Amino acid sequence: MVGRILMEANSNPSVPNTNGYDAGSIQVLEGLEAVRKRPGMYIGDTTQKGYLHLVWEVVDNSVDEAVAGFCKNIHVIVHPDESLTVQDDGRGIPVSSHKSGKSALEVVMTVLHAGGKFDSTTYKVSGGLHGVGASVVNALSTACRVEVKRDGKVWRQKYEIGVPQGPLEEIGIATDTGTKTTFKPDRSIFKDETISFQYDILANRFREFAFLNAGLAIHLKDERTGQSETFQHSKGLVDFVEHINEKKKALHSEVIFFGGSKDEVEVEVAMQWNDSYTETVYSYCNNINTHEGGTHLVGFKGA
Ligand code: 0RA
Image (tube, rainbow, N blue to C red):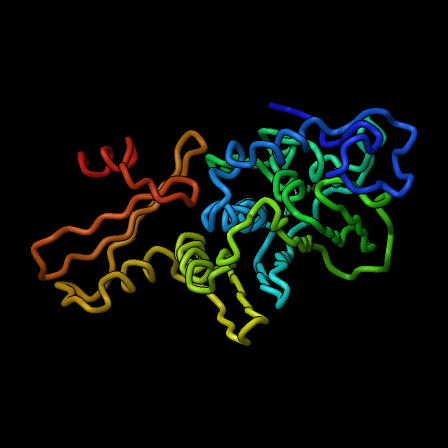
């Protein structure tokens, strides 16, 4: 589904003033309305789970950039006011003008399903069954700010509940590239006061990402508590299996590892026997744990 995120010139009191930006346009974002009206359709639910989904959406986009081979570091910072920043050192979301006259960045941030994936050749692999993209996170945030470093410049655009608060602006010079997104979830959507970015849940997912994507460094910092950690595993799946077998007695010291690719499908396997009677098998597809298995696991077991 593709829908624009705009609203009829402020007829809806839940949409903030766009400060004259796009004021001439009666065009508006049914998409934004759809997301805000039925958030569950886009992020599952509006409990703790849906709230964390916002983080996964934004981090997934940076992980995709890492899978594509352009990003080595992802910083995730939880701020004291429960806003959250995801910063990567990838190529930066393109800022060039789209045929609509809007920047590619604005399209990514305001049009449903235009996030990250651009075209089928850019990313061969993209996880996220729920890859609904940054525009959904934007629509469900009271404030969102994206900064892109590209072509020697720093670009920035700000939004409130998905609505741009001005044009994409050039705000400085850059010597490197990347994308930084800061968003503050709208607590009129996530009403339960006990909902928060739980450190351990974030840490566990980022650890898993680091095992699944050898070399990728994910730096987590919680400014609410001062806690911080970097997840990085140069040996990827081999490190993962060693971690899983840490408290067990391995029957051979070296983890068996092999992989290959065919028809643009890449496969990796790591395994190590231990002296227990139970088998532990984890299978993933595009960074997502396939709890119910699949043809990848059937093929492996058959072989
Ligand atoms: C498509 C094309 C290009 C960059 C990205 C997507 C991109 C998206 C995100 C989202 C978060 N971080 C990101 N980093 C990169 C650029 C293609 C090019 O430069 O040729």
